[in-house]
Length: 221
Image 1 (cartoon, one colour):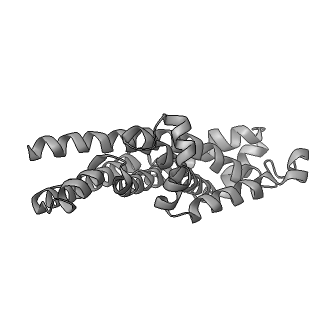
Image 2 (cartoon, rainbow, N blue to C red; image 1 turned 90 degrees about the vertical axis):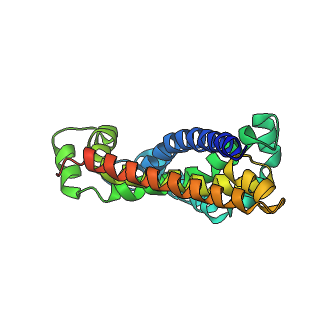
C-alpha cells in the first residue's frame, strides 16, 4: 500500500517537474538571451527599437516581479489563469501552470548570468570575424556557457521539486500532497518519513546527474 502510494506520487511529481522544467527552460533561454542581447552595446543595445523601448529593462523588471512573488502566493493569485489553461485549479495538471510561471524568471536569470560570464574576448573575436549579433549569442556565447547553463538548469529543476512539494499544500498532487494528506492529516509518520526520503534521493540524483553532464560538456577539460 505504502509503496504504491509513494510510486504514484513520485510519478506525479516527475510529470510536474518535467513538463514545467521543459517549458520554463525554453522560455527562460529566450528571456535570458534577450536580457543580455539588448543590454550589450556590441549586440542589440543600439538597435533603433531598443533605443526607445529599452527591452532589457522591461524584461528585467518583469523577471524581478516574477522572482519577488512567493510560490504559494503566485499559485493562488493565478487560479483564474490556471483554470483557463488547464481547465481546473487543482491536481497535477493544474499545478504545472504556476510551476512553469514561477520557474521562468529563475531560469532567465540563470541564462543571463551564465552568458555574462563568457570571456569578452571571445565575443569580440566573433564580431570581428563577421558573425552577426544573433550568431554571437546562440553560436558562440551559449556553447561557451554550456557547463554553467547545465548546472543552472539543474538548480532550476531542483527548485521545481521544492515548488511541487509546496503545491501539494493546496491540492497540487505529487509527493507534497501525499505528505500533507496521509503523513500530516492522518498522522502517518511512516508516510511522512518515506516521502522525505524519496525527495532527498530525487534531489541528490538530479544534482549528481547535472554535475556529471556539466563535466561532460565542459570543453576546457
